[in-house]
Every structure is written in C-alpha cells, then in structure tokens.
Image 1: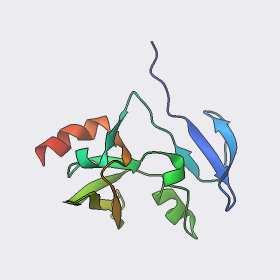
Image 2: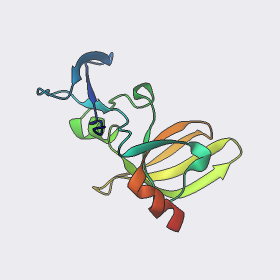
Image 3: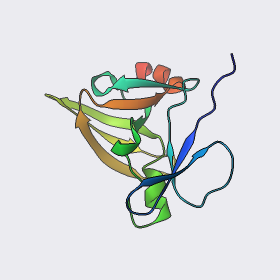
Length: 126
C-alpha cells in the first residue's frame, strides 16, 4: 500500500470558501493542511507534551487569518509546544515556529491536535 500524500485545500477570500482540492496545480491562496497518516497522528490536548510539533485539528479551527501572507501562513504551519501548562479543563502553551515567531495557544483538553509522529519521541524526552 502506497503512503498517502498530504492533500491541501485551497481557501479564498474572507469567507474561507473552499476553492480547489488536489495535489497538483498552482494556487496563490493560502492553503489548509490536512492530516497525513504516514507522518501525522491526532492527539487530544491532555496528551500533548513539550517538544511536540502540532497543528490544530480541523481546518475550521485554524482558518487562514491575518492581514499579511506571513500571518496567514503561520496558521497553517506546525509549531513546537513549549511552556506547556494544564489548568483544569484547559491546555495552554507557547507555540514556536521554525522562524522563531511565538504565540500563546489555549484550548480544551479534549481539543484535537495533528502531531508530527517524529516529534513524539522529542515530547517523551522533554
């Protein structure tokens, strides 16, 4: 069985309507990442650990937001979990992207996260 390639869903405009789906072709719009079973696994918020590379599960949870392309791209890129805290039913952490950009994320413990499989070991070592 061949491993499935990641599929990207292009979104356009402020409404976030789906414009195109597919693995081929070019688009100037910011695209939403869809889970790739060969490389990713879905975990709940209470299963996250420092060092994991995560992205909120579900395209509706991370629409391309922001005024610039950089801001829109950050919403569709994996970030490393740092300074993880659990307080009651909430999980809070500082997400750090490869370019050094950081933002605070807060979600319920039952929220889903797409996690890079190769970062699971890094999370266990933290």
